[in-house]
Image (cartoon, rainbow, N blue to C red; front, side, top):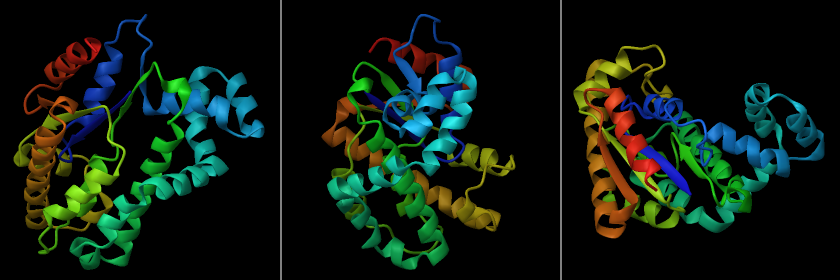
Length: 256
């Protein structure tokens, strides 16, 4: 089972997920963060030269090493190609859009590279070993639809986003963390790592314009799921307390 988080930048996706795992009962082993899932599958599917050391290393150290192995593995490239062979029309929805045409080559590279990385990872985890596990993605393929959001004046065509959603493999559940654009702005600009590469050099007005568009995009996603897959989206308010949002998430997910 795949669970993905979506939300505005600074909505607390990573923080809520960390607190969710920190509060899990020790005997609860069904739930896995992305890194642990990668290691579990990698210990079986990576080439022998990587597979054996990962099996011998202590769990904590193996979790640190595994992402580096993934970046150098042939399986990563194979999974990208395999994903595109099956779901390439999703990327095509973006590359044929007005937003793509309006972006700089550098920004296009960043968003496509990020999409392909997540796509390969998702394809790699399509494995029988994960059948009885629940894997939580901080940023999965639904969140990657934010590549349709830009700080330019180009209007996003909702049909392009819908075409993207129709072509990606959907998660079993989407956790929609809701915060206001003002909260998102404060969290983004209040920490060094809060701004994405596309917004590093942007002024406050440009960031706010981007967040307004991102909020509209999030409403589009919510509406599409409500109409087509109402049982696949769970909305949690994270405007005030991260602890209460994490507790609500834990209660909902442990009931699965």
